[in-house]
Image 1 (cartoon, helix red, strand yellow):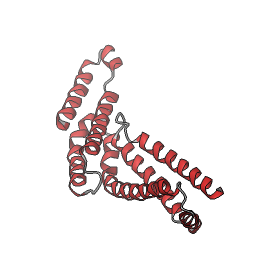
Image 2 (cartoon, rainbow, N blue to C red; image 1 turned 90 degrees about the horizontal axis):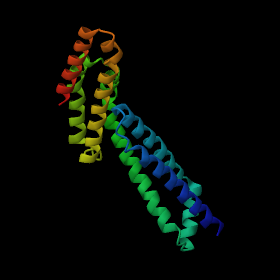
Image 3 (cartoon, rainbow, N blue to C red; image 1 turned 180 degrees about the vertical axis):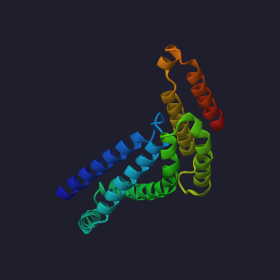
Length: 189
């Protein structure tokens, strides 16, 4: 009975970690660097759990509960299988998304006039991810990633546009910034 309560406790802990991880994936009002960070974190967390589940002590408890025909073992084993699959997915996704790291860092630091030159590189990597990734090639994931790139472009342009500058009379400088922002938006479109 003590082994079963240990197994139940592990199952709850693993579910908590997985549920916390899933919450971060839906945030779309941040840039693509947050997506890379999410999958890096998920790789570390799921990989750590996966490694712990394969330890001899855990395997011994599983085998004892299997011999005892514990009803708690099946849900635990299903969850352990999900962790293994999730780890493979996270590692694969991170491997592809890390290719976006450098161009997305340039995008995050770019002025609106620099954005059109950075976008083809980002789009080529996204195309590569779409065509070769085993897990990140779904329309949901790619749409989310493209929205994050859009959000970063909007943030870059908004940070450069200064209403105070416009109201203080620097109309020419503001017009230039607005045109550069429009060009960045058109290059993305």
